[in-house]
Length: 493
Image 1 (tube, rainbow, N blue to C red):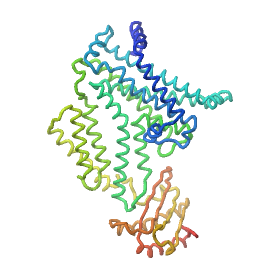
Image 2: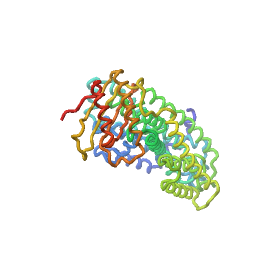
Image 3: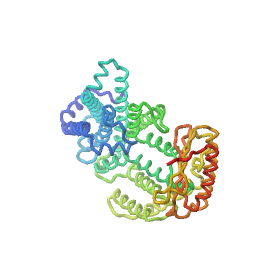
Image 4: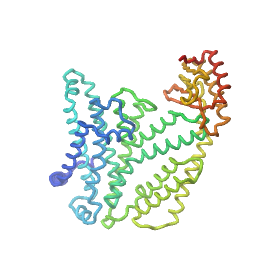
């Protein structure tokens, strides 16, 4: 941290920079104005952004949740914009020569500009927080007057946590910008690294859904255990997702899924380590920058050479099904070539480029087949074990287009361990019956049967089966037997 302590001459330079760069101050005011307007008139863009990063809130209109959402979005925007502006001189040879010829040691010049960004980020974040406290004055200040000091401290500490995470994000983007040679590449890299965890999350979710459909007899359903693992992983990769989770914890006083307070703190510590590594790496890279690199194509490994294959692989696993080659694969191949041509700024074919895409496509197919054949390494089960289930709900629904008077409908639920074991036996019988024709078309289905389990770690596992008219004689016999065992009850009209 001693690198951020300024000498007298450096302090004069910082003062001059603040006085000279009025455009940055104007940009900050515009961001503040837009976000304040977003607080008064919440825009669909705000809801869309929150829905991407972990979901919006049922009580979003509530003052605290609305304020906190806008504060963390403002911090993320500033963390992205500030490095672009402060280090834009590296993107042109004239600016590079001018700034690097200043009577300031090159390494110190990096830390000076980095510190300017930190000052802007922290001061604007606190200013924005004060503005929102003024807008919600009746709520916040009434708590102060009423003596609710702990509530105010929690609100303050939460926002300080947002600012700390924002500083980590700002440091990460600073490292990314230092590795770019043009402003356009810097903008693109910042956007890609912001949405990269989302690419991973939605691609992995789609892959898991394809594996579930290929592996299970169940024609539809969900498995929150797998989704929870992906949620936790993306929270560790994405700071906006983490901030959204902190708001949920603050507003609802609890977290759903696999998240816990300890895991959120651990994710924050991971980003503190990442920020420290990025700060050191950015300073070293800044020392080696040459003016002739300005305006050239960006070729650092963490930019296009890494991101293009990585995003291509995410797209491939997201669209991967049983066939290794499909229309989606061909479309992704075209996008891959276009992205590679853009990165090179010219159309040039190479053996590496032609070999890499087939290797990625083959890898995605092998990954799909491995997960499907191993049932996701044993984590995916058609019928869960009785030891992991806390409660179960059974339901049968008849197609509204069919004749609903042939057979009675049933429902059932239980938290009793013995009955849960019996329900699981019933589930196995129905799954075995459905497996006999699971590859046939379900265009003529008439009956929909579902089992919904809640596990002891509060995850949901749902399995659904479709049956045709000719299956119902056998199924009705089973239903009557289960009814006699008091597992299910007949629904009376």
